[in-house]
Image 1 (cartoon, one colour):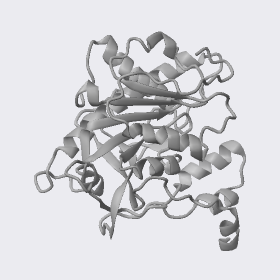
Image 2 (tube, one colour):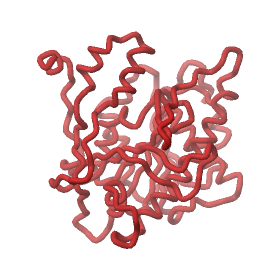
Image 3 (cartoon, helix red, strand yellow):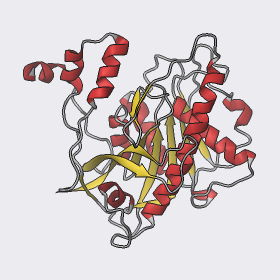
Image 4 (cartoon, one colour):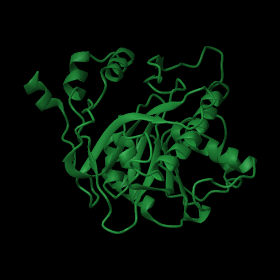
Length: 327
């Protein structure tokens, strides 16, 4: 199995940013208030600039949890031995102590929301690339039934939910989008609270909290892929409809990023709401579904936008048209 794993596993490219020493930790982010489905926390995987010092209190997590690759194998009829050879090994980056910027400033913070059938570890290389630019990245694991598999804070398994026969996708997905919007709001407030707390003056002594205290919660970014971008836009639309500004820092310093890679029309047409949004945003799209937007060049071009300050306009970089998409 060891030889097979060596032959099958793809090489993991080094992050393209200047920060090459990264840490990673998978822990639950505790909320100050419950979300729409009553959740008091969410599992997140953090990727962050780090020191070359191991945190003795944090355990090393697997690259892919067994439940995740088991679901992939079952749903896609892929032999488990093959998936185990590819995915059953420790995280690429160990749970190291967080590093601090050379200047007096803190790291920007990016909250990443995955697409349908996703999980917090599925976007590891993408999140590592963002982190290597000097960004703390938190990949959320949503418990709305849109991910491949999740576990609640009480240990209850939450499998992926297929749309029932006869239902329309927008009607079925709308409650999940609302839940994701609630997750994003709760996560942002929790991040801000922890980042502004001081070590020794709070009971939260986890490695995740230590990481967030090196971040600037007023320099907060949302990044979403596909359904994750739709959830992010749902949240921003809710703010616009209520006449509320973004509650994290000044709007002038905020960048909302939506990665609209191959996706379906979930519950609204982006073109009908973009003029309502009161938050600066950058929207990225790809031309065709097989255009390989995850290519190294496309990732680098997109990722570096998070470091562009004060973007107060919509940037249509490419045009994406998936089969059935209207916009």
